[in-house]
Amino acid sequence: MLALDGDRLTPQAADLLRRTGVRGLLAFAARPVDGVHTIGFDHADIGAAAIRHLIARGRTRIGVVMTQGRGLDALARPRLAGAESVAVRHPATVVPVELAYTRESATALARHCRDLALDAVFAYNDEYAALLLHALQAEGVLVPDEVALVGCDDLVLSALQRPALSTVRLDLPSPARIADSLHQLVETGTAPPLPAMDAVLVPRQTS
Image (cartoon, rainbow, N blue to C red; front, side, top):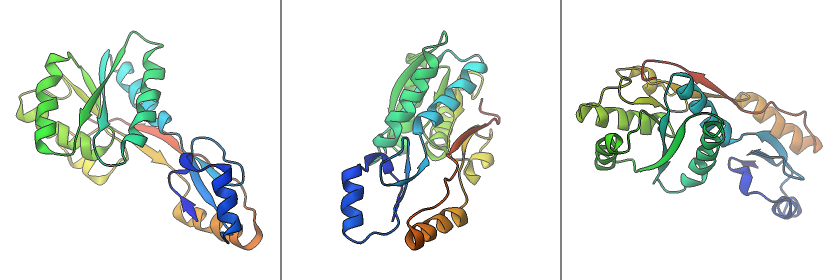
């Protein structure tokens, strides 16, 4: 079994899964989970990487998108916490802003950016960042001159935007290595540790 949201997995749940016959249990989680082979994946690191970059570029009032997509708030909250942990050590302010994945919501946020005096937005991921980019442009807000943008995931679409989106790339073990680890867990009950996720900033034209 591969748990993509291992932070919700408890040692008791892992024990129950083993007793029901699950022989290999691998999870992405911010912290180790007893009885689970864990790959470190802390969403706070993603928010921290984005905000460090924006602060280094001179931005001081930064919106962090809190998605209204179903289930995504569980990922957005630790990204916000990571952003806040960096901002508190600098003369910078983080402002949570809500954004649904709709044209109407993006337009409303684009219009609100000036009211909030935001000079940058970490937009949760590349899809939300691209949506907000087009809304800002439609409202006459210059990117990055007035508002810088950073997404996440380094999707192909991020480099295709005009201007091209800065983003956070998530470096992870390859699918083949993960599959090999699961196979070893099933066969032997143990496997070598896998490297944790590394959040790497990819600077492009929006920041």
